[in-house]
Image 1 (cartoon, rainbow, N blue to C red):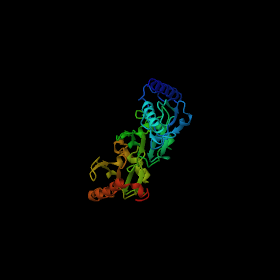
Image 2: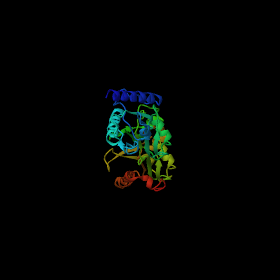
Image 3: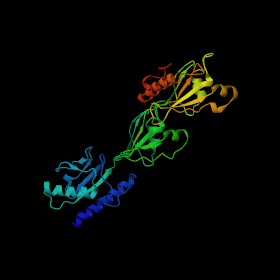
Image 4: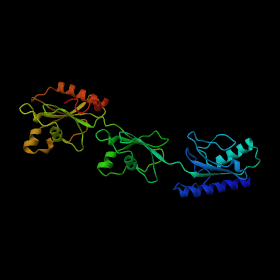
Length: 316
């Protein structure tokens, strides 16, 4: 038994050397490293060359040493797997005191997944020090006008928690506070921006849906809609309609006298917009709020089911 213990110690030493060579954390005890699928192991039995072999840990977590069949390796430490093999060689090969050593000759690559509205969703190799923006880059970056950068999520392997990630702040505000270092098995997901549009309706030349580009103001929206219909638009009674957070069918109505902004430079009337806002330019000084609310209901329902299904030209 002393000889067996010595073999285990030597195995750990060999594993430590290999780990350091591959920038893997070196195990400091028999339970420090647990084998994973795609690791490649070398199993040796002293004095029994026909039993020694190199073998990968399969996707099912098993290895198949010669003459003993499959054995679970994933999740096992060097000592645990060594003990299991010793018993197998005793039971199946009838060796009295087999001296077994196990070493890792290749570690499985650490990998992370990026999915959702990016150019190249998939599973990618990561290296020590890689961060969220590195994964976003190899994933082809976000799909313009379709990805909701403010509502990305990161999920760690073995956890159900979805960590909110504001990629917009990283990319456009140089805020890297959430640019976390990646870990094996991480999953970064970027959802579709169902609400990344503003809507301009009423008496403008080109009513319709337009991509929201932060920062965006009322002037930007009316400009995209090609301005007023001369003689029929009441820009002084312009409304910005915004759905109340978490309250479908409930809206905030913001009055904006766009004429004051144009003629007097009153910047308080040039409302800063939010994604999903509906801008309505009425024809009269007394717009029909019931009709406007019905129109808002249609637009905000489309936001929930995906306005992209209809294309930007749908309401033009």
